[in-house]
Length: 201
Image 1: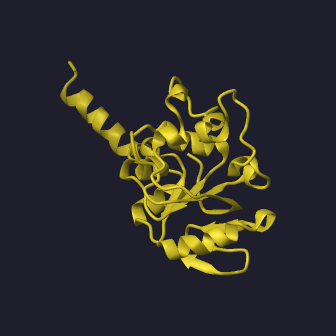
Image 2: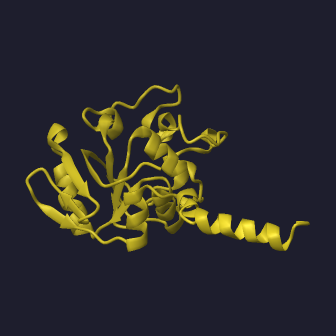
């Protein structure tokens, strides 16, 4: 998993609440178990018409937001089914950080397992970031995970909270497999001991 330490990028604002995982990545894109190639299906029903033509008014089709790496959105983001394809699609598009007043629990935890930083902030702080995001090419925001800070284009700073364990996992690029491999020495020792004690197993 790619490490997340600091991120400076364009922030796009999606002014919607209760965005569920089916809206993030519709069901017709769930046939694959690969984590790549899903970016084209991100918000597909919002981004394209019935003929597959892009809706020009959708934020991720507008420059410079088509290069967004940060998404600012409404409360209860990622609700609905627990599909892990939702963070896969965000990541494949290029989104590394999602900022919202609140998240669905399963989606929130899936983000950390896939290298995406979800940040929950009060609506008053979200409003400040929306103002920053409205500046088009100047909508550049820096996310500093070690210092737990969001820095706006005018130098304003917003602090955010994060669980220390989840913070460490992102900074060190540790998903579930990486965490398991940290204990490789103990696992090998157990396997060696087990073969000695139970050669028939």
